[in-house]
Image (cartoon, rainbow, N blue to C red; front, side, top):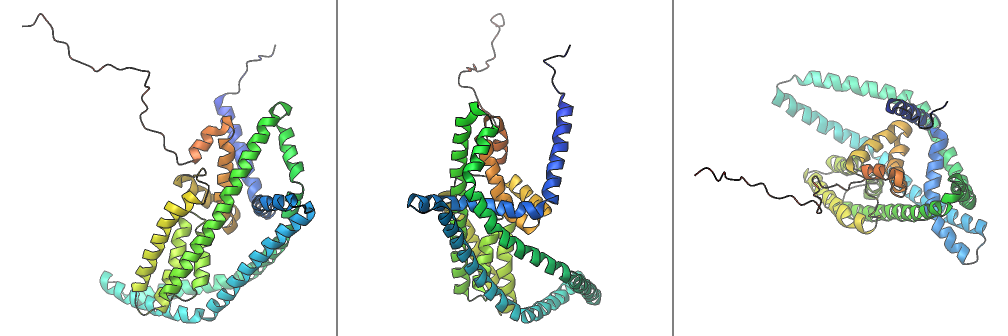
Length: 375
């Protein structure tokens, strides 16, 4: 006779979970060339969905509305790409000059450091020459691989608009599939969860775009005011890197500081850039993010850093950019499902109080009673 109350032991459930997690991560890594474009397309489709709905409400055919939305997106991204390309071309033309300046600064630093630490500067120069030779050899060997990567990137760039079109076109079918997946008795609840989650995700992603635009304007204005070369390129890159928490901000401020160090006659510009970027970060964290980016989506620092490194390990640089939006989407879904709310709490930054006192529990203060028999 089969025991109906049989339960899988904890260690067996843990083993099954770990094996399933390993298989899931393996699939994400092996299928990254297929999954990454789909994820990019899904995120862009979520952002474009309100535009499509707006055009449909104004009597546009659904296919025409989708094509118009995608065309506008391609034009904007093409304009941004052209701007970055022209700025990068100017940067590459003066790259030898920057290398010479950095080499001079490096030699001066070695001379000072060798005197301070009492180390023979010849040994440091030999190590640097050896490291530079290995770097050049490695770079030369990687040229072929870089060409392949660029070719794959171009192919993906043509595939993403197709994916976006199909996701937006088949949106009703995909939503109906999700509703049917959870059964007829949960249909209304699943519909409500989908509606709320989609709305919050749209607000969050659109807020990220607006935040990036504002940060880019502030950084470009600051760099132009200081007279730093390649201000537009550095400002746009800084705004894009700002999407990556903690690590992106450090790289974003390091790039203009390095350019200022190589192009300016005084090191004071490095301090000016650091101070201005620090002020922009304060404005971003205390005013732009709470007001523009959806304040309901808050990821704690621990999981933000972990997921950025995990995204880089799985999918490279695109994974670093996708990690935070994907984690935010996962948290939103967790927050709307009762069984998964503890996981949503774990990903968030809402700290519970260390000691919670039940107001219904009345605790009398402890007092030392005196023995009446003792005089």
